[in-house]
Length: 452
Image 1 (cartoon, rainbow, N blue to C red):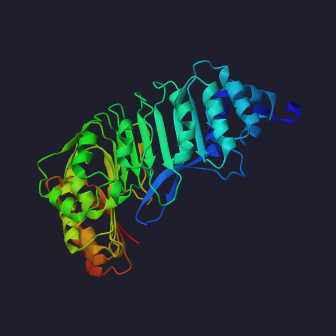
Image 2: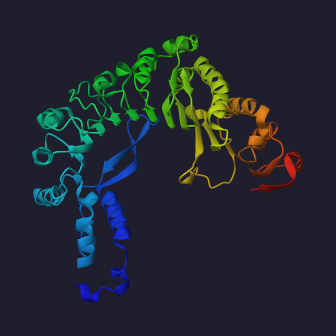
Image 3: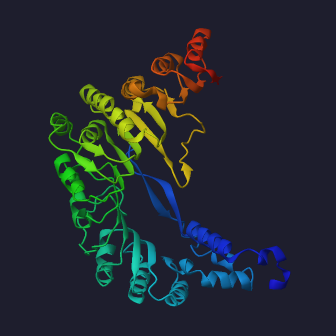
């Protein structure tokens, strides 16, 4: 077979081939970052979702059989044989055989386990019994299956596991208890639809990444409890809370009144993602202090009443200046504001420069340092803009370019706080000549104005 393969295929460096095989293996096993929507539209989380069962997670192996050279490279690439997803027992044995040659190599397991599928449970227990080191577990599971695999998990090397993800596979219900398997070296933990208090054994000081999704109202932490939990994790770099905060408006309002009584200082946080009811997000932000520049995503949803809306607006007026204070200088690439007041939503995203990989690009292709989308939520958006402008007024030289989209009247209010721009782009269908004159006055002599 190798005689019919073009010479240039043989000339591919083994390092490049190994990277290609790694990429294919990961792509076939899991589609990571797929949108996973549940009951309420305003909640969403980004979790890995197993591929359709009709599509084998090991189809990538056929690529490694192109020729003897490619096969040899694949066999010598240890990472290919360290990521297990449940398949037939023959394939499991093949993976175990090839991984056993790498004594001491950590392995990762991804699985959807249901009590109705005993074969999958047996395969999982068999894999765990045959390996000595499991560093990553990514499980979609129900309560009954968790109980069945508990003995296997208890027999694992507790100090080896670094990453654990548990997604409760019962739509519309919350898993209210999970065993404490005691994994003292855990650095990444993600949980979906599991009672927050049940997670306590896994909220360890060693954690660098914590993600909690979809907690029912009756299971949520009140803010003081949550702050206490977060204070016990001083190394956190990534924090995601989606539908996990206490949602009672009266409690959240009272907590805003004691803004100065308690604050969690995140010394290492690089990414903060909060999505929840407007007033609960506002009360949480009021008790947060960021030390380092961070990538931010905030989403406010489901306002209860006008009083909650007012509190959310007030919080953004005070918090956005703090975003600028902590993140703007030298590191912030752009801020995106988007609002849909009809659905009670306000989103804020901020992108920072990454010294290794350049700039993390926003979904809109733009060179702007500031991007504002003016949609239906004018009150929400203008409140956020007011806070942003008040923070930038003392140091307008930090904004070199801007891209404003939406109604011209709203965009012009934003322009009031901008001056000496190198580049200004206006996207609106109702711009007047007087608007263009005002926009031109905000540019440097050699600045560029673009209208769309």
